[in-house]
Image (cartoon, rainbow, N blue to C red; front, side):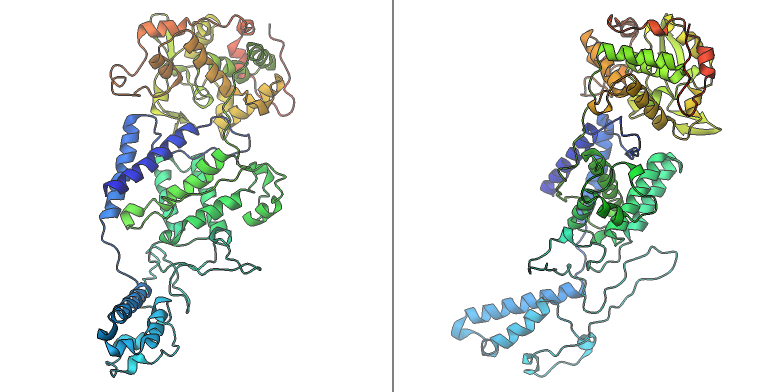
Length: 568
């Protein structure tokens, strides 16, 4: 048991480590955001809680008594016992039972039929005992044994798998040969129609729906990640089929990955009403960009694995994908980290943003550069989120939830550490931004963005266009997230303590037991250091002086080419 739990814990730790390393803030404009996890894995406490849950569930599965053999398995066991018994008598030579030794071939034929799953008459168990030599006669072909104890078809109860057709005893899927007579690999077959074991477990669609309902209760029905998770669940069912949760095999997962090799990455390139297999077949030549490794592994595949194992502990089935080893297509490119921006390009972004006359184009790059915070959190800031923490030192902090159109919604932050306060550079106070922001009270600082259906995604798209107008090629990974990384590098160059750097950027700080002690926020001395962090003299900050924030806040983004204001 210790060996099994150790192996499972190593696998789970690897999964959490890969999940954390694969975080990617900047996604293609049309690519959906990845689903969030119940545990972010950003703190030792969360890792411990998640690992304890998995270990308890795995221990429960290991300790559970093995299920009773099915009728098909019992017939095979009988076949093995018979063959072993024959072998023992033959090995005795002259001392062997002559009744067995003299009829070896006949007996072997009988038990081989049982071993290969040959059908047995349903009434066999009710027949009287045969005469001593009757069982030596070869079995006559008989109708398949009817299955008893059919599950209840009460509409209120979960759906179960349909029982196998005559001739299918619920054994592993049959082997299929190609035109040259060679076996076709299981993952290359149409997994919707392969024969599967008999099961009384609920269907994948039912288990996944329960998972989605739990997610909806925690994050709300309108959560965009929930919509993405449901789409990917439906895609898996369309490609692989809806089967009992315990009858899937690693071949199903590999088949899913192999099909998604040709799935277009951009949503706009997938015809809305076309079947999934038709879209895949149309892109067999890969003329459309395929999914990245991050989107494939940590988006499309991970959500299916999470759903299929959701009820394994409570229903007592083994997670079929828990130890599946799969191959990833070479076309699934690995995630590319954001690259740093030069002082010249940062100045170009600031200049083009100021020329646009739009508040978000002007302030978001500056805030990203000076605070190191993610764009999703910055656009959700309200005036009340900004305060004077220490004399002359201003900070911003979100409570984690905010009121939008009369409903409380979660601010899109990555980890709990993102909800701690972060220091505002004194330059923001010099240009009048802090005073103006605090005067907004309970109003959003970027109201035009917050009126949109998906503010975070729209803001990311607008920043991408702004960078493009500033002459920064998107393919080089010089993106808005580069400003965040640049601020972290500036803090490192200024010898800011690593703990304070993590707090300012919104990263978890409890990297070991010692670091876990003390305040989980920036002290006054460190806050003053961050507020007075030297600005890069090669970056042109002059475009932010003399701005009329009230007038900028009234400007609305127009369709087509934005009319530029000549700011005085």
